[in-house]
Amino acid sequence: MTEHSHLSDMELRVRSLESLLTDKGLVDPAALDAIVDTYENKVGPRNGARVVARAWVDGDYKQWLLRDATAAINSLGYVSTQGADIVVLENTDAVHNLTVCTLCSCYPWAVLGLPPAWYKSFPYRARAVKDPRGVLAEFGQILDDDVEVRVWDSTAEVRYLVLPQRPAGTDGLNEDELAGLVTRNSMIGTERLAGD
Image 1 (cartoon, one colour):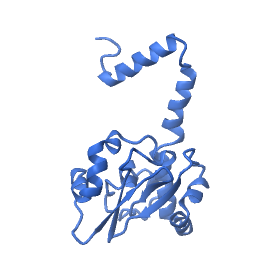
Image 2 (tube, rainbow, N blue to C red):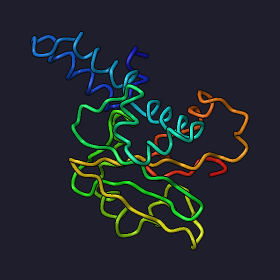
Image 3 (cartoon, rainbow, N blue to C red):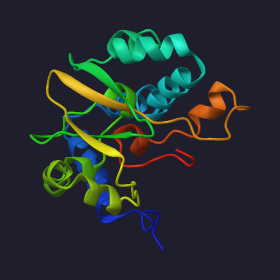
């Protein structure tokens, strides 16, 4: 068994390409490591989860987030380099929000990290608008008929982040523990949190 036998075909291709580009002097391995570190540790869903958890425990912050999400998120140090404003959409008992980018894959990287492959796929982009309840059902989310589903189409100028409802029974949890409950998909709108 080789050391790479546990890697998928895609992972093997990426490693081969990286090795070839490095050997030819076209890519600096340190630069690649810095990029990977940025997306693994400095941007990503854990940042969005911290934004959501802060909104759950701090009513003033929540109101600021709903009023001017870009400034509220920047105040936590999660500054977007994309030049797009972020708008936060609050899920309630009566309204469930779902985000999509029908043209490409506009996405709030600073708080959600890299977009998942399904978010960029044509079937998701097309069906999220035409049949949002069907898409949600495919993610295991069956909403009551009286819940309004709102679909928000991201653009180069505006990106969306869903503020999921705080799950029931979490009153005793601190902000860090609450952040651990938040998922990337819940901030896209394809998942409701337990008790949500």
